[in-house]
Length: 202
Image 1 (cartoon, rainbow, N blue to C red):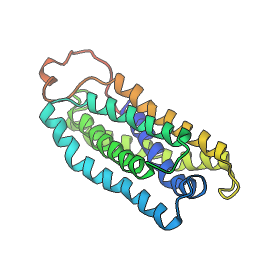
Image 2: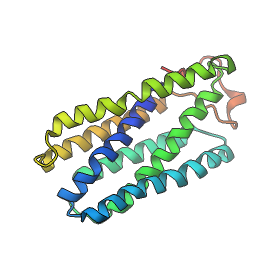
Image 3: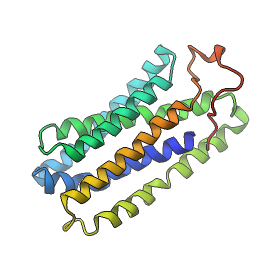
């Protein structure tokens, strides 16, 4: 499950950084000199989230609510990219996408570290499986979406709309996976059932 979550995470992250710039410039009429700055806001949001949201998750004592909420939000943002015709809000979307991804990424590995099914003896191989197999979407998605779009200079807005809807569906996969996770946070770890939904890497 965690491997599939990381696959979906990497798919959305890669799709945005690979195809976001030409989309913003060609179909949202954003000048090239600002397109790069807007994409940079993604990493601003990512950094803020990755340094704050895991700590908030510790204070709340739960992981699943954060994974569920930010997976759903990221998917909705990709849908907004597909259907919202104006350039207004593009910077906010970029920042929020980064914030969502910056929350999800560390929490995936936090769950792996807390899962009783894995334990210390399997932690190294589990993290390796999650990161290596999950990262395969980093080349699968650009190849797939690139085939859909063809030459970027000739791709139509409809092509990009399909690409963003595909990204939204993949990111929504994290939401589905999160529903199958057992809560591993400190607030509920002691009450965790012996036979719950799987949290194994894969």
